[in-house]
Image (cartoon, rainbow, N blue to C red; front, side, top):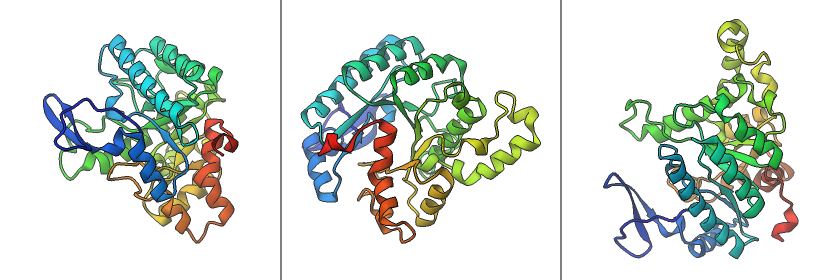
Length: 314
């Protein structure tokens, strides 16, 4: 992801992200300086990065017009970075999802004017889950524009119950992503919008490992689970993507088995602490994966998801 942080600096190459006058997070220059990022990419063998804004800057809580103005600023900045390094960076835009009309407007600009292949959205939009009918115009526009959607968890405090042990990031994020997938699947989003291309971050949270429970619940309590969609959850495996960021070889093998070898893309969460410090290292280490499968996950699936051609980066 790529961002510009307007905050006070202690030292060169370091910045503080502020929230309500308090330090939220200290970030390094690789969060905003493409030259630093390129140097680190070369050091770790990364040819191309897909950049998106950090989710805490979605600003869905703000006035819609203010969020649109901020999104345009972020997207313009991202487009300038991609334009300067077109063979190294790809951009995913951010849009004011709390106002679908403005979101569609900015999506059009991202795809048609800025040349992005897709957008990044949060795992929910304030009080709306991703199956909410209010968001249907956004999905319809994404189908029309062939706009890929990357879903990243955010706002995962869960009423303050996760104030200790870094639980929002360790537990809250997987829970948010799992909820997002369930809402789209059980809410019939992939039935209503069959051409929609969606990828979920962090290995799809807990969804791949609880699909049996989810599908069983769908069958035994259709009065609760099948109220918006009568197609079983298992039917949707292979119809959406997840990234590979699971930090464990057994989990990665299971993820590929469940989600499908053509539906897992390399995820790094670079440059943050929970990311893979050498992107793709776990994939490369997998003895159960042949070289073709490794290459598919490392690059091929992402190209397909984003509708890009490898020759664009040669």
